[in-house]
Image (cartoon, rainbow, N blue to C red):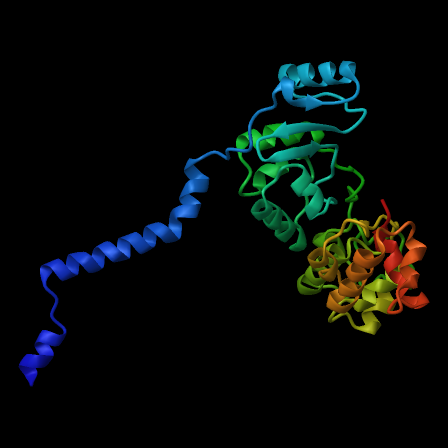
Amino acid sequence: MQKKEHHLFYFSRKEKNGIILILLINLLIYFLPDLADYFLPEKNEQKFNTDQFITTDSNINQAASSAYFKNKQFEQSQDYITTKKNGLVQYFEFDPNRINKEEWLKLGVKEKTVSTIQHYLSKGGHFNNPEDLKKIWGFTENKLDELMPFVKIKNDQVPKEYPRFSNSNYKGEAKKIINLNFADSALLESLPGIGPALSRRIIVYKNKLGGFYEVNQLKEVWGLQDSVYQKIEKMLNVSDETKKIDINSVSFEELKSHPYFGYKLANTIINYRNQHGSFKCLDDIQKINLIDLKTFNVIVHYLIVK
């Protein structure tokens, strides 16, 4: 019996070598995509070619292309399109803190890299200058060179000086008002009753919404007690600069990920659009039975018709 058990768990040298070879092949297959991204440049991300520019104004075309190759910076008076092997890639001025997934894809950024960017922003990250794009894993040097001339970040998004508040000197009115849409975690934590965890949840929720259009929306953040909200309400304001979703081009997946739509409402809107065609104006959305006046007055702040 002992002899049989011994042979059951015994492997010859040939069998051992075979097992090791199979393990090595599995490891190679598992890490092959990462190795390919690391060692091989993207085939579809190449430098600009002046013959590939398409524009209705030859003077603008010539000035833009020559300035790019000489100085890598120029002023754009209009969008232009360059043709690549995998289709059309549209270049335009953009703020990396504000554009959505579809706009990133139009710029020719890989979907995997776009997901990395959105994850970075959802965790409270912020691009303060074009060079910050180098923080994102997945960008090739060629792609960064192409995008840099078009990055335009609003400098007023984060106040230079952070006002500090405490329960001891708070008397009901704040000496300085914080713009909720531009506040980072450090600025939020300066408010009474707001700690690191709550400030992160506020920023994550703000990014999912695409910005607040009124201070009262802060009550929707999980974990924010009403007593804390009453203390900080007068210390806050918002500028209605919410990120707009084009209702005629948005996908079902993108729309359902917004907190104010979800699966049911997104599915209803997309089905209505497929049956009746593009929306002519935002008021047309009220024709959908599921959208009453109260719902419309909320979601209209995040929609646009193009």
